[in-house]
Amino acid sequence: MSRPAHNDAEKGTLEVRSPQLAANPDLAKSEKKVADLEVFPVQSLKKDAPVSPSNVAKVPPPPTPKQKINITPYVHFIIWYNSYRRFFTVVFILNFIGLGFAAAGLWPYALKYPGALVVGNLNFAVLMRNEIFGRLLYMFVNTCFAKWTPLWFRLGCTSTLQHLGGIHSSCAISGIAWIILMTANLFKAKASYNDSLLAFGVITVIMLIITMIAGLPWVRNTHHNVFERNHRFFGWTALVMTWVFTLLTNTYDVATDGFSYSGVHVVRQQAFWYNMGMTLLSHCTPWICTRKVKVDIELPSPKVAVLRFERGMQQGLLARVSRYAIWEYHAFGTISEGTHAKYHYLICGVQGTVSPANYEFSVLTFTVITGDFTKSLVNDPPRTIWTRQLKVAGVSHTSTLYKRGIRICTGTGLGAALSTCIQSPYWYLIWIGSDQEKTFGPTISGLIHRHVGPERLLLWDSKERGGRPDTMKILKEAYDYWQAEVVFITSNYVGNFEIQHGCKALGIPAFGTLWDFVRRLAICLP
Image 1 (cartoon, one colour):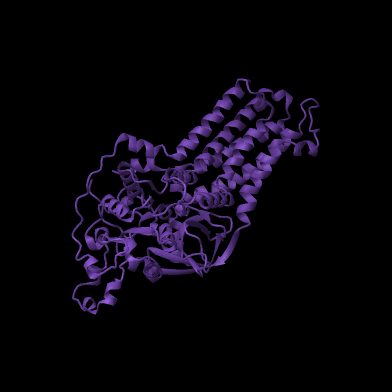
Image 2 (cartoon, rainbow, N blue to C red):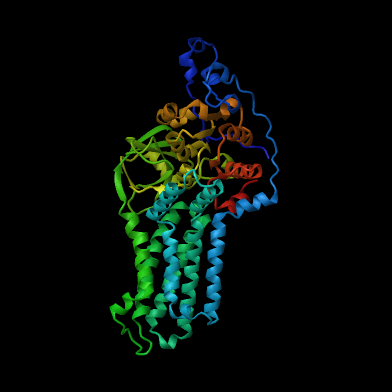
């Protein structure tokens, strides 16, 4: 399959001003272009060795043909059946075994307290997406297990934290299944129940199902605004309906055929406290951190907006921003020099749609799913913007666990990768793309100039070199040279697929962007 031409959205490599030019006036007077002297190939770098003109690559040759890596069916399966699906499978099976026993009348607890199983599952589903809970988990793991524990254990921690969404999805679906069973049992004995219980049972089920549909991968990734609005607002409506349904079922007395139980009785029920926890987790804690803040927007090109916010950040965090307080929020990787810094930055790439012709070189998933929002930043830059002051921890936040690592990214994927390499001298950056400095501007260029030395930086300008690199070749060389323990990947779907499968085949531990709408894209791509 022939590769399509690079589109404007795939802008990826900074033209670094070589420090050798300043040190050697003869080089500065050379008739060669600076671009000919600024590429630092892995094979020319020696650990702890000073960088000299002999280390600097000359005019780069055209990319060599890629070496074919044998990707076995086992590699495909083990990457597809990741921790997300494993969590989903375990929780789903356990719940549906319980559902089977309950439906057969063999589990007395489920028959007596069905509401507790409904809201208990929903409570865990919400908990897995709570920013505070997530940050506490990451802080605990990073504090207790960094560097000294066996590598397999640290890799397991990263995989677990990255795939908590499997618990979120399976608990949500299981909670809906339990409330369907609960409502069905009410209808079986409808002569003993008030019509209001039956009505609110059906309404609650409908609201939860709509919320679930709005959160499906295809909807979330191809109609992001639809997902944000419907998943949130129908979710809130479902929460209200769940409260009403819980109160009605726990105050209704079948013996007297009336709502005769007191409030004290309701408060003593498990379902009441599960609902209370779900309300606090989904509504109170996230929104107390929401603020309208000042933002400065740099527009180095029509394809990129660089957002600057006050205060520094830890590495590996994602910022959620929106033009409106309760409307759709969009996540972007934060770039910061550290908690002591005055500012942190977001790189927002503009890419409206995805088609089979341009998808291979489209930028990061954030770009694909937030086209309308990022376009508005370029066309109508705001002075203030809404954001969650408590940032979301991403997989890069676990980089603290490892002694040395590789951070490989393409295009705007730099936004999720650069902080790790700025804040830790033990992380090596590989950045693939073209015409970077013109597209991303002086702010991002300056951060790289100041903080990432050439001994741990590999920049591939596909425009200058005449094409994309043999990614696995340069990654394997960097991995061996740097003596890395792990590789973190931020790329488009095709790049992520290629690198993850290549790393698995070569025995290199790697974590990539989560692409959970693979099936649809596989149909679209030729």
